[in-house]
Length: 48
Image (cartoon, rainbow, N blue to C red):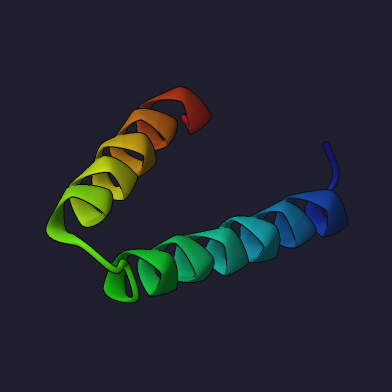
């Protein structure tokens, strides 16, 4: 993987992280917020 591809992947990851954080902040119920947080934590372990 070259430098440009790594940089692009890092930007995409940051954009996704911001989108997930926004979704968690705007969750209509505490249960939905908890579910989104669990999904986000599961994805972090698989991304690395």
